[in-house]
Image 1 (spheres, rainbow, N blue to C red):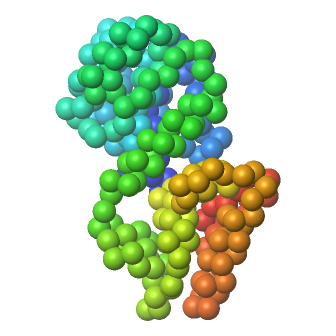
Image 2: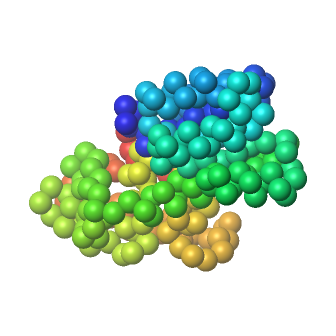
Length: 228
């Protein structure tokens, strides 16, 4: 992908206000978004770029959203989240059977959309194996479950490994404690829990044994990301 941020989003929505609202809300969180206002325009973008998620309205001029789902599946393995005013169960079932991965009914809250996107990105990430992930002089090997700094292997716990994997997957994004906990643990997150802070601190200490580089940055009041 052209951008270092691995989460590329295509917004396919003919309502300019809704399209711009989604674009602006996601761009604030460092998602790399492109806007299409018709099915035809969406197909042009799909021929040029790779996308992780496609946010798709159904009632589009020209090519309908339902028709576009089939086209998308022939072109890419992008996840499709349908965002539609159609709230009938039959409509939802039909588009899911066509190949959509999720369905969100209008009107919607942007927080719910982000949560559903995060689930799709997390599921997509879980399907990727035998992948080397590199940042500065650090390498994470998912197939061997190994982290190296230069020629030194860093001994991380399973949760520490998952935290680092998440940050490496999306190097420009800031992740909240909730995001990190949801990815690395299968337990309910308590808002005042210090678990994430402790694990981040432990990762930093282990990295300091082998390098003076800073790898994880605290974004005060928001969360954590890879250091720039």
